[in-house]
Amino acid sequence: MLYACAEMRVMSKTRWLVLLAGFLGCWSAASAQDVVLIANKGVQISEIKNADLHAIFMGEKTRFADGSHAVPVTLKGGAVHEVFLKKHLGESPGDFRAQWRKAVFTGQGAMPRAFDSESALIEYVAATPGALGYVSRISPQDKVKCLAAVK
Amino acid sequence: MPRRMALFLLVCICTGSLYAQDLAGIEIHGFVTQGFLFSSNNNYLTMKSSDGSVQWTDGAVSVSDSLTDKLRVGIQLHMYQLGDLGGANVQIDWASGDYRVNDYFGIRAGKVKTVLGLFNDSQDVDAVFLWILLPQGAYPIDNKSFFLSHVGGEAYGGLPLGERAGKLLYRAYGGYAGLDLNGGYVKQAADAGVVFTTAPGGNIYGGDLRWEAPLKGLTVGSSARIQALDGTTPMASVHVPPTFISADYAQFEKGKFYFAGEYRRFPLNTVVTIGPAVIPVPQDARSWYAMGSYRFWKKFQVGSYYSHYVNKALDTRLPANYSKDWVVSGRYDFNAYFYGKIEGHFLHGTGTGYYDSTNPDGLKPNSNMLAAKIGFSF
Image 1 (cartoon, chains in turn orange, red):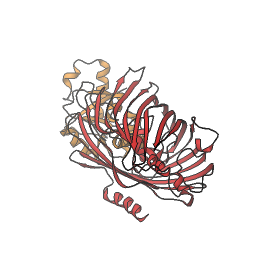
Image 2 (image 1 turned 180 degrees about the vertical axis):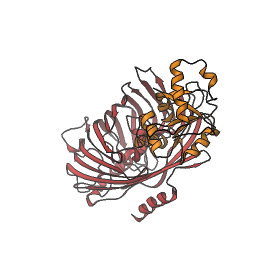
Image 3 (image 1 turned 120 degrees about the vertical axis):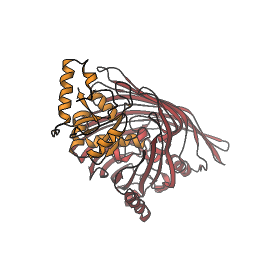
Image 4 (image 1 turned 90 degrees about the vertical axis):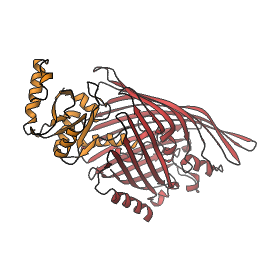
């Protein structure tokens, strides 16, 4: 809860509620319909639009709204990966993979780093400035911050 | 055949864990495909397809690394065998440095893929398509290595127009592109007695502007390519003055549906000089296609397209000057890395993809074809 207190002081009631929902989600298991968005603690923003998530994870944007560099990371597969793609990016795993293959094999982009396990992903996000990912849940001991997704 | 199968298996085995390798930030990806083609009449794409042919293998490996937040470098090596074309030559598909200043502007330099229409720069990436053969009037597979890339550079970027107006994506490029000595145009020239030992080529410049509409999934765009070409042999020379090639296209993707269409114009005023004889070879190629597909479930997709090509500079009633192809396709993804495809072609006319040397007894105007492919990509 300590993470974003400074930012919260100046936020509207709606944003408070969005953030509160995000933080509550951090410490509970995400339902099958949702995931927890996490970022490196150095990332200054506390919420992110789904449109920006889509742009960052599809390689169209390389920066957060505050101008800092974004490093998207993914899981290699599984239910959490599929829920994230469907709910936040509006993509199927097949389409996501195909679009990145197209970018990679035409020299237009580098695929986001992908992890076998959530623990490895959390560890990477904690250690990498600008890293942004998703997991089913985190614990208070994890050294990452949660982001709230907004429409 | 054993060599091709060995190559296919080797790439599959060498990839080990089936995941793209990542060595401290260096990304390695690759793909390999093996195709089969059977035609009821004629031999297509220099293969002995009327007997059934497996002379159709593609493979590529790309290596890239992000040196800084803004700078990325990489290279992709590519080998292909398509009937008599390609062979044991490793080509550089692209090799470039990419400096992305911000989300609105970036530059690439080196050997870079050339944008033209919806699929030109990705036409060799079989894994991303449902189709085995893209519409041949617009994307002739026997000449793909000529159209794919150029040596030079390009500027690229995106301009958001606001939530209600979508986004504009642009690319502008310039450089030099040469024919593939093992590709279709050089083979056609050789069949006509003009044998190149050095690759003809010329300057190229152009660009692409596409609008991602606020209606999610809709993209509309237009590309232009201006290409000159010169080549000499001990006996002859070929000259193509700068030629304007245009492509206008649209695609729409919603849920399990995908639709796309494109119109291409490719006028050429080629002049072949053999001794004192100056021979004009007129071409005013116009082609278009319309395609649609539906994903029945995650692993299975079907689709169909119609591709139309006609050379307006010549008598369009003759089969040699047109090509009309009805196509049905299916694709099954066994997992995230392996897939298989099957495709039927009902081809009228002989305007694209046929060679005198592999059809010594002449061509019949129509042919049906069955194509199949398996592929692996990591």
